[in-house]
Amino acid sequence: MTDNKDFLPVSLEDMKKRNIDALDFVFITGDAYIDHPSFGTAIIARVLENEGFNVGIIPQPNWNNIDEFRKLGKPKLAFLINSGNIDSMVNHYSVSKHRRRKDMYTPNGEMGKRPDRAVIVYSNKAREAYKDVPVIIGGIEASLRRFAHYDYWQDKVRRSILLDSKADILSYGMGEKSIVQIANLLRYGKNIKDIKDIRGTCFIDKDEDLKDNYIMLPSYEEILESKNDYNKAFKIEDEEQNPLDGKALAQKHGDVYVVQNPPQIPLTDEEMDIVYSLNYKREPHPMYKGTEIPAIEEIKFSITSHRGCFGSCAFCALTFHQGRIISKRSQSSIIDEAKALTKLKDFKGYIHDVGGPTANFRNRACSLQDKNGVCKDRQCLYPTPCKNLRIDQSEYLELLRKLRKLEGVKKVFIRSGIRYDYLIYDKDDTFLKELCEYHISGQLKVAPEHISDKVLSVMRKPGFKVYKKFMDKYNAENKRLNKKQYLVPYLMSSHPGSDLNEAIKLAQFIKELGYMPEQVQDFYPTPGSLSTAIYYTGANPLTGERVYVPKSQKEKNMQRALLQFNKKENYKLVHEALTKAGRLDLIGNSKNALIKDRR
Image 1 (cartoon, rainbow, N blue to C red):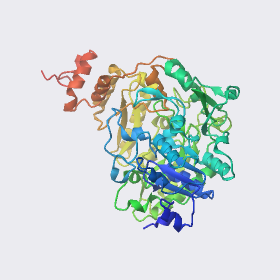
Image 2 (cartoon, one colour):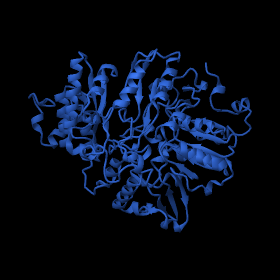
Image 3 (cartoon, rainbow, N blue to C red):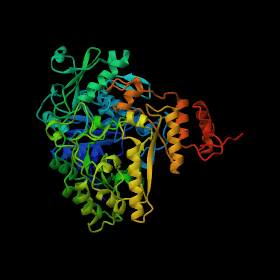
Image 4 (cartoon, helix red, strand yellow):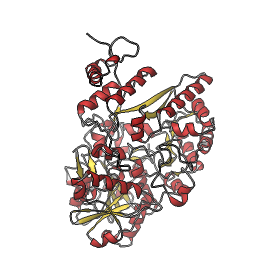
């Protein structure tokens, strides 16, 4: 059993054992404390520890008890606050806004251990506990709400989370470099109010002269009044999300400005190696003994090989957080971690995943990104691959081969998602062949999301012909190997651009496929994504094109039911949808019918 002393302090008793009178930083988080590099809290805390700072953690404090926020005493430098690995509102509510039953990041999956809008609640409580201690917020919840943003749960535009949280600094994106720079300035006596030049951070300023040095976004008040101004702001934010030549931005809220410095420079391979080599215990804190935390089971034997994604799907906010430029670990760093996994007492020989947001994006999209960053006016894969895109999976394949040969490793799976279009565009089929032969456990999950080119275009996904080509090649390869390994497509209903006719096309594809999805994902408008901006405004902010948006709950229910048309409980909704769309030919006993005519 790992000793408490191997973990970061969570109590005054822990501090006393380490001869710590006062901590430099107290980290408040909405997750249980799991000391594993798949959790942002553990990474930031260990990075600071590696820089010589004392860090303690208050996981999932009772926000109704102010003493919970004083349990580690007054920090010398600052409070660090996040909601955990997942947005607290997404964690709590389904897309239909019903309360979820399980929290994957809490012991035994218990719900109710963190508040709604956790960053705001925790920050205000920390300020109440010690009024003069600086507050720094970060993580996914803060990062994606750094400017005025549409809030799906209240169906309105909310102002920057910086104002509601009353925090001093917001660290957006991947925060290792930013937090170390802030911490060192605080250590040497700089006032938090004067720290205004750190990349990857936002702060509040009252200076009217900002207009001369920053790109001004439409104000919060203008955005409230005009959806066109909302889209104008989104377009500027999107264009300046470039660490190499992105400009600083400012947005007025009342009589103050929310100021965003340019994005932080991505970590080098060497810096990534250091981050993932720190003293993680790779398990939950011993205080959770006797419980199970579902999230750790998903990632305990998985390895993060890289960050970032140049896929730029419209419904994903990753590019607004991690960015489009890939940061990767060296092969030797990953192999060392794999060797460490084989020594864990409960390791059975199976590495569950080696990947990142997209597993087969191990390297930067093109050499131009090294000098210029990402392009403002084009995407790497959409609508077709950029002529400069480097399509090469050989280095990733080389890594997988080395991992397969390690003593104690029986199988290396890939579960973090494959971009099938990138795979298909590769003229060398070796990766597909070895993927099917060595790295799949009966089924491969991929995300075509839809089959309608009209909807796929709004999603910034490849046309259906590309997925069909991948299906054929995948099935042919498994036939050659004499393996029964199935494709499991992730499908999405009610995305902007999808009306009932497009949803019916998707249902027909499902029938033809002979595969009935057990789960269907309704489009979830979360902060930071292009699709959310389209959902709110009815127009694409990057092109100005008007887009149909299914908004009524009734239509959403019909679109969702169409994707599971054979379920008895969906019959009425499917019948209604087909009738409304004038597709009575799909009701009856014909081979193409989706449902029978019960009359």
